[in-house]
Length: 263
Ligand code: FBP
Image (cartoon, rainbow, N blue to C red; front, top):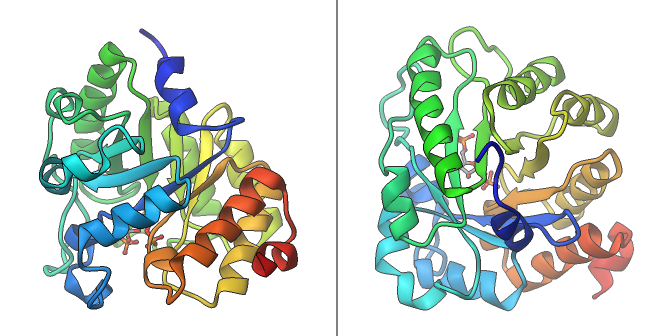
């Protein structure tokens, strides 16, 4: 297969749009992101199931141990590489799960973080190549976290560098690109243009006030993005259901931020 199977794409994208709930932060950031509720993967699974998320992002370990609670109820994106942030080294994210094993876990898509511009980029691109081609054998879509980072990237949300990261994703065969927000609508439009036929999802970033985050969501949708892959802005919220419903209204119903906040 030279492209992802429609079977998976139509599970993850409704009318071409998606909202994924990201919960790989336990590895990527550690306990500092968590409070006495959201440290528990079951709390996150419940949010995803109550609120029509079209995908749940887990690393292998959570995918294994919490399987009975989410399997068959929400599409699963298995993040197959990851790293912690204790050692402040040049960024490189080793593979932690094979595509074969992700398939055994019931993956509906494969997630891979590529630190574009890192001194380790060539090694990472080689690993990505193998993963992308194995994913193709199963028809699984590949979601690339296209994150320019490292000593040669002074600002990882600079619009030119984010657009470059998106273009790298298109060139190396990702199907869906998860990118950071560039700070304004027009510069994000260029990111979407550079992504070509890839679908673009925006990461949430640090938790901000709901109105700011929802305005960001509205802006990216207006310039051609396909949705969000969000974590902290949902599960660090005191009212994750309200934020989730508002995201859903903006993405799938085209609601204004004000209307979305009313529900
Ligand atoms: P958030 O919405 O919480 O920002 O999650 C998006 C995400 O890409 C996660 O999937 C990942 O764990 C994290 O951000 C990576 O963050 P960082 O930029 O600090 O490496």
